[in-house]
Length: 381
Image (cartoon, rainbow, N blue to C red; front, side):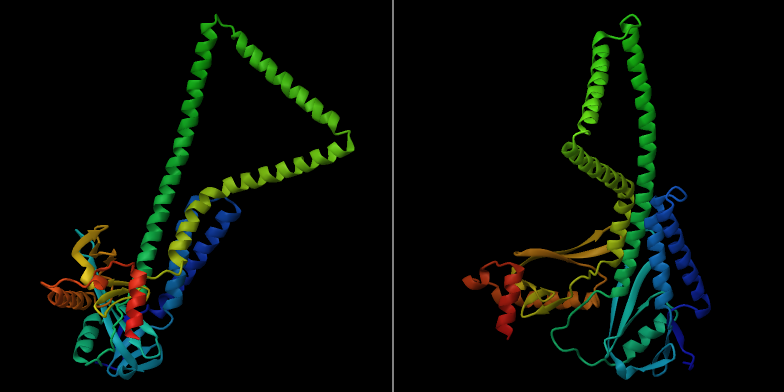
């Protein structure tokens, strides 16, 4: 392999300015849509915001490309030898049905807790796989925590955000169209009803309509006159002025909220999907139990069934049903197949241990995952 190495992640530094230009353009259009909603439709703001986040992140994270060289990696100008690599894990593959698209990746963790993710479509991915297979990694200390890598999760967040933004635009446009058609149809039927009522009474309005109209006008006039006369009383004038100011402010606030409500209904979900600090808990097998993070434990002696199922026509879920709850694991989990094999092997050993024997009352008791985790952690210490 040459000293120049193989480009694994990152983008051509000469093309990074396109990401920056796209980010600035999306932000500028968002600001214009906020300030002048009549000039640009606000229904496009969630989509523009997601595009700005994507382009800005691509620009920021592509500062230093990663190259695979003989003695390790080069991150920009920094040389990272293999000795600084603590472990390498993999995830996938998962694909979209009826398409040739399949995704998988490798995660490289350094001893300083820095990490890199390399996708299967990156140049040099096959060479990286060969290099990792030929390298002998040091055994990891038990328990081994299997995690969900951040970059594929970030990719999925952007997919969800863009889909929501597009659906939001379409639904808002359909709602506006339905409202316009509804107003036109409602006005037509109201006119037909009034015309029918007018002709049904020999082209004269019914007496009750006259009474309602005259009563409404007279009552409104008396109310306005009474309020006008009360304004000459100093105390009552102050009270009426306060209520007038309050109701004007409340009406203005409600009108502004109604104007911004459709925009917030689309913008807030997109913002939360992209930037809410959520990440799935890591999993491990420890003391004959499956741990979901450090706070939930599912004993393998209570494992009832396990099966693979599909979700969204893309992901394969591994569903595990325990007596104290059920969990689902995605193939995005690092080293999914080794973890699955490890758990099944452990489950077989637990079943052999209890086969043909009554389970002690203490172990047969079903507790919550939190209680099981506390008991197991207390026993292990």
